[in-house]
Length: 345
Image (cartoon, rainbow, N blue to C red; front, side, top):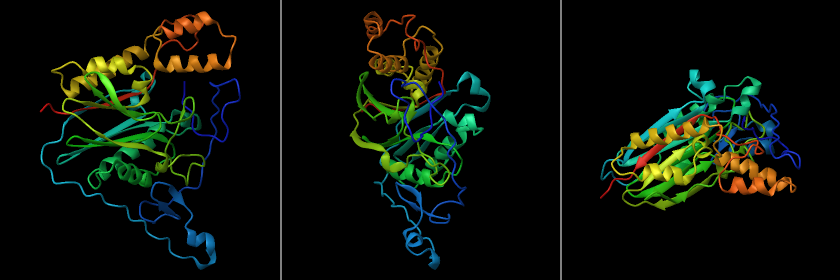
């Protein structure tokens, strides 16, 4: 199922799975950061027409320069935690490496990581969904050298990304036992402690299978900007495992399944990332697996169809797929996971 770009209307009543993809293209912007476009960048809100131009266009005032706020981090006291990533592209997108992207940006004792998932609905208009996601990660990694605030990293990456398209984006910064994150969309971050989730980002959707998504507002009429990001600070403990992933993981694995993998002692971050990705891929390719995505889709349809069989609802609730459930089976998608292990003291 191709994920939808934002559009002006939601699916009609009684058809939660209906997705209409429309082309919404704006004028092509000029280059880069700090007011060198034809309009100004407002931190957190994207590109817009400068107030001076709106009030008096005839004066042709110079677009003001927006200077990002620099966050000063404490002096490094120890090495960053162990970190690794694993990527398994969608089988039909493997030749180009899939449409997800990620970055890992260590700087002294600070580690900044991110994942982005290009929205596949753009492919219907001949646009490669991977391009915008890759730009976000490239500029996110660059920004991780400047800022210790994940929102600043996200905001900077958004301001620099020029490609047509849209993407979810999750950025997390870990320094010592401090975790900070910002998230837009249905990628996300979860913190596991002894196999259980103790902190997680919220799933952000406009409606089912249409996540909130960043894009260049000068090129995409309907889009989200960093000001909608969900963010939080969290105090980690020794032995915690932080997992950032795209929906290719979270749509195919329940938290308890990830928890079983990360709770095993003696595994490196690389081994954990590989095992999570492999299990998500195995589930995605299992036509009988009742995935988190399938259960959510079935629950939504059942709400909209009150005459749905109580027997089907019973089997769905206990995790047994029945033939009547059209969404049974894993969800093929790009799979990207970044794992950070907090050292044992």
